[in-house]
Amino acid sequence: MASSQTSQVADGRSARRERNREAVIDAFIDLIMNGENDPSVDDIADKAGVSYRSVYRYFEDRTDMMAAAADRAMQWIRPLLVEASGPYKANDPLDHRIDAVVDARSEVYMQIAEVLRTALLRSNSEPFVANELYQARELLREQINVRFANELDAFSPRERELRLTSIDQTLQFQSLEYVMHDRGHTREELERYLRGQIRLALITPEADLDPR
Image 1: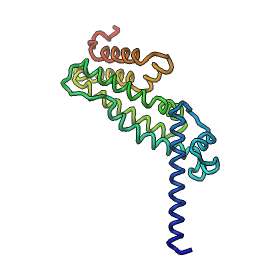
Image 2: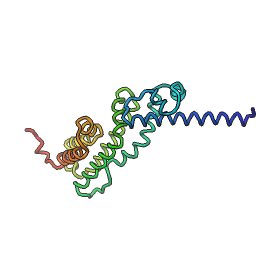
Image 3: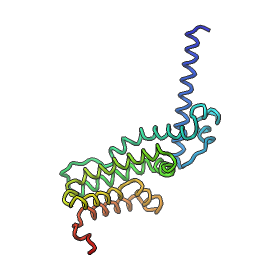
Image 4: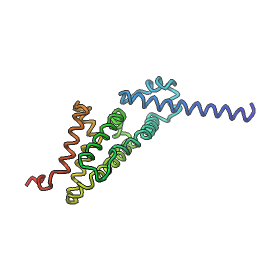
């Protein structure tokens, strides 16, 4: 066989391998999006249209496959996180800014809920998942810090940090997951609760929260 033909065969095998590898990643994510928090390799292989054994030709182990799937999922999720505070201007009325961030957070949550559920389950055993969750939490916190800077700056430094933490915790996706998925509240109820908690943290005078 001529060297050019050998090269073409090798290129074809490499391309097929890459297509199959991508199909496995797609299958893994699709199963998670359909509520399978811990899909088996058999199920992944079947959905991808490859054999069980071939999965381990494309990935060293299940952890390697999960890392690749997490990276793919984050390519989709990261742009959503950037938009998770909604459109606003610094001089918008407070209620407008609250509505915008609540609407944006609940919308993003609805889109990523299944992936989030799997990430939370895996975060204690998979460092790369824990790191992605940490980075997301820090981004979401900073969004709140910027969006409500005018109101937060009215408090003393320690109180400012406490109010920021209160709003941040309320709006983190883990909290939304608890309210909707674990406690069974509707999206409308969730959004009403979020608006109330944010307003409480921002407009209650500092002295009124002193228990003494």
